[in-house]
Each structure stands twice: as structure tokens, then as C-alpha cells.
Amino acid sequence: MKKNAATLEGTWQLNYISGPRIAFNGLYPDKKPTISFDLKENKVSGNNSCNQYFGTLKVDGNKINFKDAKMGMTMMACPGNGEQTYMKTLEQIDSYSISDDGKTLNFIMGDIALMRFEKTNN
Image (cartoon, rainbow, N blue to C red):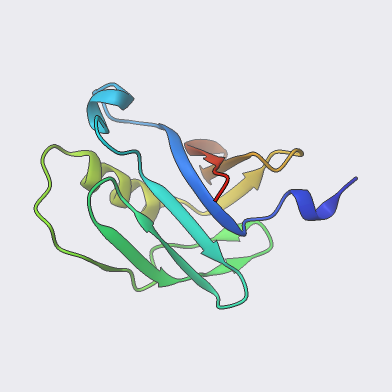
């Protein structure tokens, strides 16, 4: 079992979000949200489909907390609800899991996966 394959480190692109009645591609027609983890610097950052966001990585085992990450954000005006949906859902997440091959990241609330990301190559 390769332990280092399944790590948060790096950049992930959202490919599923639970909740909204709007289809995923309708929510994010131009740009899908991303999230990047820098484990050395203990930072989280990304793009919520419109604005850049950044904060402190709060992770303990498979528990993760974005509500207390003191997120900052750029302030461009954004059409649609994709940005708000993404940031609100992020705040509900309390744990994560990564597939054995290290390519899929699930963000979970309780025992329900609310968001799914796939690893990007950069």
C-alpha cells in the first residue's frame, strides 16, 4: 500500500457538489472551483469559480475544518450562485477521504459526501 499516493497536498478540481437544484455545469459554466493544500505551510487556497480564496489549513487526521480557517477572498463581482454555494458548502465539511489511488478527494459532512474533487496534474 503506497501511503504517499493518498495525500491532500496539491491542487484538486471540483467535479460534484451536493444540494443545489441547478446542474453542476449550470452552476460552474466557465470555470470549476479548485482547492489547493500546502501541508508544509499549513495553508489552503483556491478559486471558487470566480474569486481566489485562502486560509489556514485546519486538519487533524481525516477531520478538516474550513469554518475556522479564517478565509480571505478577492472581491470580484460574480454572476450566478456558484461561488456562494461552494463557500457555504465548504463551511459544512467536517472530514475528508481520499481514494486509494490518490486521485479523488471527498469532502464529507457527517457520513455524506457533499463535495468531490479530482486531482489536477499541476
